[in-house]
Length: 105
Image 1 (spheres, rainbow, N blue to C red):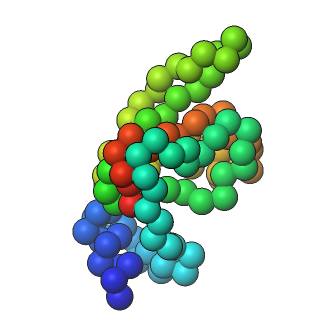
Image 2 (tube, rainbow, N blue to C red):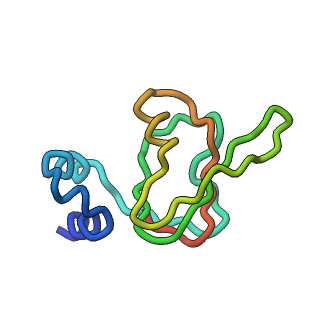
Protein backbone atom coordinates (compact mmCIF):
# COMPACT_ATOMS: atom_id res chain seq x y z
CA UNK A 1 0.00 0.00 0.00
CA UNK A 2 1.34 3.43 -0.97
CA UNK A 3 0.26 5.12 2.27
CA UNK A 4 2.12 2.53 4.35
CA UNK A 5 5.27 3.14 2.29
CA UNK A 6 4.97 6.94 2.65
CA UNK A 7 4.52 6.66 6.42
CA UNK A 8 7.34 4.14 6.85
CA UNK A 9 9.78 6.18 4.75
CA UNK A 10 8.97 9.50 6.41
CA UNK A 11 8.21 8.30 9.94
CA UNK A 12 10.46 5.25 10.46
CA UNK A 13 9.57 5.10 14.15
CA UNK A 14 6.09 3.91 13.11
CA UNK A 15 7.51 0.80 11.45
CA UNK A 16 8.30 -0.60 14.91
CA UNK A 17 4.78 0.14 16.17
CA UNK A 18 2.64 -2.04 13.91
CA UNK A 19 -0.57 -1.67 15.95
CA UNK A 20 -0.26 2.11 15.82
CA UNK A 21 0.56 1.98 12.11
CA UNK A 22 -2.60 -0.06 11.43
CA UNK A 23 -4.75 2.44 13.33
CA UNK A 24 -3.22 5.37 11.46
CA UNK A 25 -3.76 3.64 8.10
CA UNK A 26 -7.48 3.39 8.85
CA UNK A 27 -7.84 7.19 8.94
CA UNK A 28 -4.87 8.66 7.07
CA UNK A 29 -5.23 10.75 3.93
CA UNK A 30 -2.76 12.74 1.82
CA UNK A 31 -3.35 16.48 1.58
CA UNK A 32 -1.27 19.09 -0.26
CA UNK A 33 -1.23 22.66 1.04
CA UNK A 34 0.24 25.67 -0.76
CA UNK A 35 2.76 28.09 0.73
CA UNK A 36 1.11 30.75 2.87
CA UNK A 37 -2.03 28.72 3.59
CA UNK A 38 -3.32 28.44 7.12
CA UNK A 39 -3.44 24.82 8.28
CA UNK A 40 -4.57 25.32 11.89
CA UNK A 41 -5.89 28.51 13.45
CA UNK A 42 -6.24 29.70 17.01
CA UNK A 43 -9.57 28.65 18.52
CA UNK A 44 -10.20 25.76 16.12
CA UNK A 45 -10.81 22.23 17.29
CA UNK A 46 -7.98 20.05 16.01
CA UNK A 47 -9.46 16.96 14.41
CA UNK A 48 -6.38 15.70 12.53
CA UNK A 49 -2.75 15.31 13.42
CA UNK A 50 -0.58 16.60 10.55
CA UNK A 51 2.25 14.22 9.73
CA UNK A 52 4.44 16.37 7.49
CA UNK A 53 5.84 14.40 4.54
CA UNK A 54 7.23 17.32 2.50
CA UNK A 55 7.63 21.05 3.03
CA UNK A 56 7.57 23.04 6.26
CA UNK A 57 5.22 25.01 8.46
CA UNK A 58 5.63 27.74 11.04
CA UNK A 59 3.91 27.49 14.42
CA UNK A 60 2.99 30.73 16.19
CA UNK A 61 0.86 31.93 19.13
CA UNK A 62 -0.63 35.33 19.86
CA UNK A 63 0.06 37.52 22.86
CA UNK A 64 -2.65 39.49 24.68
CA UNK A 65 -2.43 42.33 22.11
CA UNK A 66 -2.77 39.94 19.15
CA UNK A 67 0.89 40.04 18.10
CA UNK A 68 2.33 36.83 16.70
CA UNK A 69 4.91 35.04 18.80
CA UNK A 70 7.02 32.56 16.84
CA UNK A 71 7.30 29.14 18.52
CA UNK A 72 8.99 26.75 16.08
CA UNK A 73 9.15 25.30 12.57
CA UNK A 74 7.97 21.82 11.66
CA UNK A 75 9.91 20.10 8.88
CA UNK A 76 9.31 16.96 6.83
CA UNK A 77 9.29 13.77 8.90
CA UNK A 78 7.80 15.53 11.93
CA UNK A 79 4.48 16.67 13.35
CA UNK A 80 3.30 19.59 15.44
CA UNK A 81 3.58 18.85 19.15
CA UNK A 82 1.00 21.51 20.03
CA UNK A 83 -1.59 19.95 17.70
CA UNK A 84 -1.09 16.56 19.34
CA UNK A 85 -1.55 18.01 22.82
CA UNK A 86 -4.69 19.94 21.86
CA UNK A 87 -6.11 17.15 19.70
CA UNK A 88 -5.85 14.45 22.35
CA UNK A 89 -7.18 16.75 25.04
CA UNK A 90 -10.17 17.83 22.97
CA UNK A 91 -9.13 21.44 23.57
CA UNK A 92 -9.30 24.39 21.21
CA UNK A 93 -6.06 25.21 19.43
CA UNK A 94 -3.89 27.89 20.99
CA UNK A 95 -1.53 27.92 18.00
CA UNK A 96 -1.60 28.90 14.35
CA UNK A 97 0.14 26.67 11.77
CA UNK A 98 1.11 28.44 8.55
CA UNK A 99 2.62 26.57 5.59
CA UNK A 100 6.02 28.08 4.85
CA UNK A 101 6.94 25.81 1.94
CA UNK A 102 4.39 23.85 -0.13
CA UNK A 103 3.59 20.91 2.09
CA UNK A 104 2.26 17.39 1.85
CA UNK A 105 0.62 15.91 4.91
